[in-house]
Image (tube, rainbow, N blue to C red; front, side, top):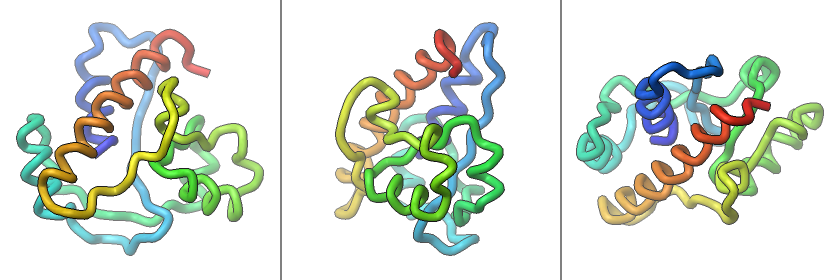
Length: 137
């Protein structure tokens, strides 16, 4: 969901001064799974289509080429850094990178939970996009 919001926001920038791309990968997933039906429905409400989204595992190459790796939960950061200690300076909690604090928990109980998570992600991603425009480092 965060990738969808970022791509949507970034494409709406009139003349971005920074080139940015995004990707989505998990620390404990299996490649190839579609987005959950609740996520599909909620994201449609935000004007985003996740029909073609498929899960993928975060790889060493992805971490190595990324300038910034944003994670939703602190334990995701711990897992990534345990496998990629050299990446400590570029792996951040999404909320902290956006100037806030706290984990963004994966939704667990239906569309209301998914919607609350999506709204939080949209807000945080908007702050990240603003930060990247003003301070790309």
